[in-house]
Image 1 (spheres, rainbow, N blue to C red):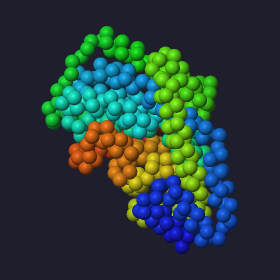
Image 2 (tube, rainbow, N blue to C red):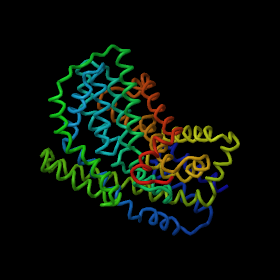
Image 3 (cartoon, helix red, strand yellow):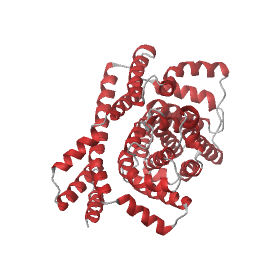
Image 4 (cartoon, helix red, strand yellow):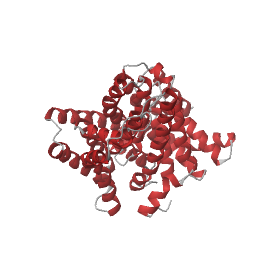
Length: 430
């Protein structure tokens, strides 16, 4: 009965339009009151969930991404991408994918990525004769790669939701190949649609311009190399790397590029504080939710239900993907990670999947949810920039969805995509 109350109240609050964080917290409170447990349990679980040193990485990574977004780094990355692949059929579409991938590496946030790249690339593509739905779909889907990059705070959230079963450093290394796979799949989709619609190719500016634009963008792109090198060499921890990222970004935007203004800095700080507050609230209330799920053995119950459907590992993993995708369509990315990891990670491990690999599966699924209504944060941002309705974009979204699902299947069923680099660079034994 307690489990029914927990689930029914949670989904009931969501249907009523209550924000996810409050829906999680209120459903946990209802269940605790029904159980007759002390109300102090609520606050104990919230505080224990948020009072973790590793969570310091979250505000730092968020702040670093906001500084990159407001510090003029995007323009230099766009120019580099345009010079590299702009001469291919549908050149601006190709440039958009590469630019989103590169900026995702320095921001670590799909929403920041689509905000920065969309503001530059979508109007540019519309001006050059590309359809608005194509420009928006390319931008919103390619921006999702930010969830897999070393600066992604969602990796930190997953590592802690996994209960210490996975190394943050291993996750950071593991995200690079899936990010590359995702970029290649998106390039194929963007090129296929460009050929079908007869979009033109741009002109190659020459290697001199490529080198010049690369030199201009390199300081911003170095943030990924600094984080990886520092962690792998043991100079600083994954948590400390986030503070290093902020320091480097401040120096870069104020003193090297000299594009950061004081008003933009204050705006970036305010946005980072707001985002961090939302994430920490989610973490706190989700800790209550996880406590109750552990108390009622939800993971075991879910595992038993899945085993009744099939005992084949490939089918179990496919079911997990489907469930995570459906949940991601109406839940925030952080909330999905915090709630679903304790449930599905043990099931995936029984099916033979490594926790690091499952982290990549989780992040891609949650990123896919960011581009799917009714929540669809990145999609709403992209549509707002492009001045087009979500319905119009959804009518031509299938090629881009197919690219994302192809990348997800590669990561799900080919462990090497997630585990090769952690094993090579860090000696990961998983």
